[in-house]
Length: 244
Image 1 (tube, rainbow, N blue to C red):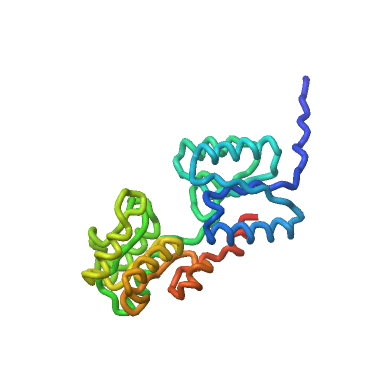
Image 2 (cartoon, helix red, strand yellow):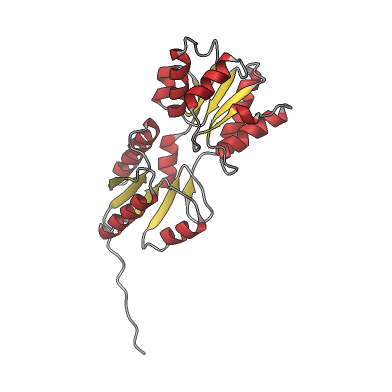
């Protein structure tokens, strides 16, 4: 009987990293953590910027295949079953970072719990009417947790106090209207970059943070430190370490 022997694929000691936006402080910090872990494992990384476009993400995977990487760390553009099934077909392991799916190994903080903690923080600070800036789709985990935290205290996020960053609304108008009418005394932003935009709008209108409006971010990046605002921390070193 004829038996075909297949040689194991030779290790390249290269790890692909596909990130959606290299200009954001959050992803810069994550990249630094991944670089550190790669060095401790005597490996090198090759970085791709998908620019939040699925076509560029796919092109990055094509390059990773040509370079015969040992594996890929991916912050995915989407989590559809069709797309992740496509990713699983590559002959290297792909690990999702900051987002989770049962279809692929994933490392991320609990965003629902993070959103819940923001609600608890704002409630404990005496806020009753709060605003929200971020995606408002039903699958947004930070928003799910935020609403849960409010509901546990008998409060709710009013529809007109939630700004959908994936829509076509005017953030400046929303923040100015919310602040000047005092419809809310605090705003939760799903990341520190959005929090920075909100703080800039408030300050341009002569308002102070947190005296006139408390702003809370997510990621606890250097941006949050510079703004001196509260922000939910994401343990980048731990995420990178577990991923490897």
